[in-house]
Each structure stands twice: as C-alpha cells, then as structure tokens.
Amino acid sequence: MRLILLGPPGAGKGTQAQFLVERFGIPQLSTGDMLRAAIAGETPLGLEVKDIIARGDLVPDETVVGIISDRLDQSDCQKGFILDGFPRTTEQARALEVLLADKGIGLDAVVEIKVDADTLVGRILTRAAESGGARADDNEEVLRNRLDVYQELTAPLVDFYSKKDLVKSVDGMAGIDEVTTSIMAALAAS
Ligand code: ADP
Image 1 (spheres, rainbow, N blue to C red):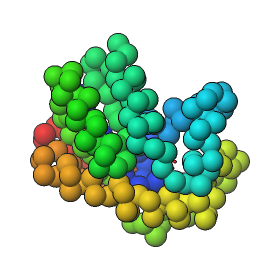
Image 2: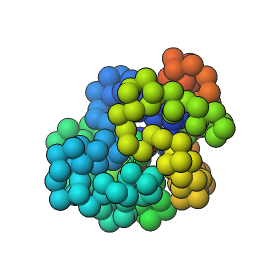
Image 3: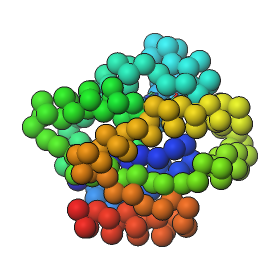
Image 4: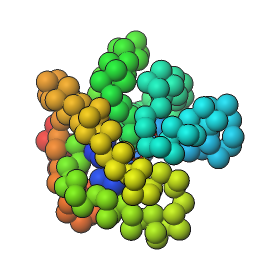
C-alpha cells in the first residue's frame, strides 16, 4: 500500500498515519518529523531549515525531495509507505512522480482529511498547550501562516491528484476512531 495523507496542519494526519502503520505494517514517512529530528541533532540540514520551520514557511522543494528520495530507497519501504506532510507543493508532487516512475511503482491512494479551517487553530493550540508547547511553530501567528501556506501551495494538490483519480476524501471533523473507519472504508473501495 502506497499512500499520501493530505490535509492542513491539525487535521490529524500523524494520528491516522500511526494507525495505518500498524494496520498495514508499512512505515510513516513524515518530512516534518525528519526535519525536526535534524534540528534536534543540529545537523547541517537542521541548521538550514530551523528558521524556516520556526516561521511556518516551507523548506525548499529540492531539500525535502532529496530527503524523501533517500528514504524511499530504504528496505522498509519495499512493501509500501505512508507519506505524511509530503508532497506539499505541485513541484514536490511532480518530483515524487519521477521518483516513483524510476522505481516502476505508483500510488494507490491520496487520502484527503477534510477539516474546517476555523477549528484548526483552537485544536492545534490545545495540542501545543497539552504537550507543553514542544513545537516552536505551534504558536498562533506561525500557525496562521502555516494554514495560509497550506491553502495557497498544498490545497491545489487535491485537484492535481483528483485528475489522476486517486483522491479519497474523509471527514476529519469526526472523532479519531470514526476518521480511521472512514479511511479504511475508502481504501477498501479503491
Ligand atoms: P503540520 O502538518 O502540523 O504543519 P509538519 O510536521 O508536517 O506539520 O511540518 C512542519 C513544518 O516542516 C512545516 O511547516 C514546514 O516548515 C516543514 N515541512 C514539512 N514537510 C515539508 C515539505 N514537504 N515541504 C516543505 N516544508 C516542509
């Protein structure tokens, strides 16, 4: 199973990805997690992206495409993978097509988790408060920027993948288990 999880910050992509990891025995590839690990490890990549992420802007396409390209070559991705937070721009989606075509594989589905933008700010700020504000980019101003960036650069991917007939949309406003059930139903129907 080769999947993309698409949805704005706070839609619950990470939560649903963890369930899918267990269900299908395939890894979650979260560019956000990988970039945060690089920042924590103070690697050259981490130093390059630290300020960009703190502002809620996107890191350069070639940087994340390089990370994903290396990650897809690892053996645990042979059975499939769940992309969480990548691709985020049309450029990244095109680069992913080339990477997959080179490997002779394709995507099975793009799961769009639809949420009401107005409720997201509250949801994420609650998450930040509960986790002790662990993420530097979970404050209101940066969050609003992340949502704007999503609308402008990432939301067009729904159209991009709809044209390829890959999109399965689920209602992300429902409870966590209900969203999981909808995702499984959508995938079973594909
Ligand atoms: P969220 O879905 O909550 O916005 P992520 O953990 O996916 O959070 O991403 C956090 C930040 O990492 C983004 O705001 C962006 O700065 C950077 N990032 C993650 N993935 C990408 C990507 N595919 N392209 C560019 N920047 C990315």
